[in-house]
Length: 354
Image 1 (cartoon, rainbow, N blue to C red):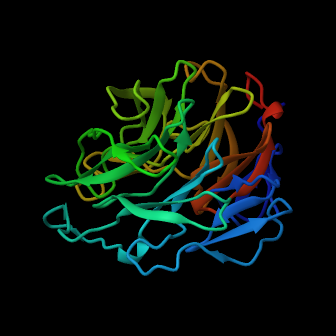
Image 2 (cartoon, rainbow, N blue to C red):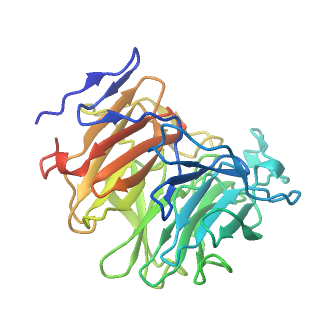
């Protein structure tokens, strides 16, 4: 099938394999034991019994005072032991400032990371705790490994010169306690520069594989052989990307899937650059976000199907999220830009694309 697109509204185009989802929620989602879905809205959970068409009234997560009350900015997972773990940004104490003359973040910037967990499918929550103090950018991903470790990539501000690095926060006991990994620091200078907004999967050989947003025309990759406690192999990947995060996931079929903003629009070899002054970034970078592309891998990321554009929007589409609602049925949303809400079937994609 050729890579055709259809008109969705005045500014948005969708690939014909995509179906618009009848909901306005962007995730993250977990499936509960009765088949219903749960997501987070602020300091509350909501549930749907009809694939997101309707949602329950909010159910409060924590009635304790701040700091550290849950927010909508987080990542969510249900472990194999049926523990639901939510890791989130403390938006109530958020502070940000940037001195364009000094090209440095303010001394008082703050965006801490907290975690909370539920043992009864979200009815009650316990052990609210701060797991990172400092300034963390957007949370993108969370996984549980075959060994049972929960791994969350955290972006963190590094100073003089100000840029971002990435580490992993790891729990070996279903989110009860956490340990921090070493920091991946690729250099850079600017409030949107460095090693940022990572997504990750576990490979078949039990290594963890992380893809990091950068301003250097491609994802950088890092790998860990000890469940995310240390990252030792760090290098440019072969996947071109603009300055925007991707989302990587392992499907029930065993394939990997990646949704992301490529370096340039399809069929183009250039795009306007931003940065280069040490405020946004040290180097000029493509911030192409007009298209979202998808690709699949059957060999743990060594090779990929041809990237296929699944959506275009003149106002931008970025920060994708993938939820496999049923085997081979992928829900793809954008959480912070574009409000894309579509589903597609894995079987519609073959080695040559769609």
